[in-house]
Image (tube, rainbow, N blue to C red):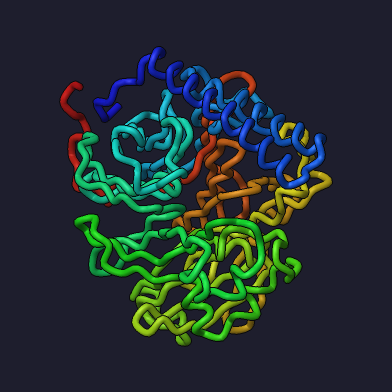
Length: 462
């Protein structure tokens, strides 16, 4: 595996956990004092303390370095690695997830043979995480990777979710880091650089008045404003634009405020102004299929509003948008036939009990939808027939391949799989942790072998 970082010692992990425990005890005490000062009933105080203690118990394995609890999901089987391989050709698959004890990337052949691997530890890449304020991860197992790609020379770029972007060379050497609250996706931009979602924190006060009425209600001291970032090949931000501001400037306040909250002060409100989870650029090779758009236009997905939008990055004019039929969608992409393909999560967290008791036969299943932006008609291309059941309550992605094949990431099942044009599974990979759990996979991308300029993937011994 590429990378030279050493695992933190058990003593250091225990010390961090004891410090966290002391902080938790202090927070519980302060919470009780504040609750009493505000006339909170004793039962509410007990609930508050119980919640804090419960979270501490969940976090204990992380701090002891024993179990990466935030990466695990219940498993319904025993399969591991490549379980189905009916794919012709010699392309390679880049997997983003948790492997061999750390968040990381793996490049594999279709038979599961490891070609290259990259280890990611936030503490090593961002020893100074002050740019994240109180949101800095408590340990390397408190943040994962979301959004990655690989370049022809074998260099990889990946986001720590809301924790910064890193570019490593083929052997794991850091080429650059971007200390910013980046998240969700990394997409190559025409002419060089990358489109990456970012985020900034807005403190309640004068700055948030620009977003009234989005922030006028609620009890949150801060709000999160998602950003469209254009990042250069050198890792420097070249463009930074607020998504909420773009939508407001385009007269879409009615959509942004269609959130169902009470409008009196103190009402419950989401701390996110929007939830941006993808930025994709319309390539010149597909532009003719979208006469209403132009090469370089940006396709973005806003999960909380079930909203997909196309924006001109030269003028920041909204050219098109559509709400649904997708629900809490991810990963929209332009397609050569003039349609937009979307990973439709098709469910809400409130639909579910414990994930090990989920019954797909009585719940909506996630699917892949193609939508025509002109007629606004859509069709389910995968997930609409018996035997195609899959469920990703959050995240999930798709990668269009030749001959109508689709490489799909089922995040919460620790599964990446490919289906052919008839919807039959022709390749599958399961990221197993142990007999009871799988580790989450946040992305899978296929690359033809001739995409790479690398002839020898070997690296010097660490």
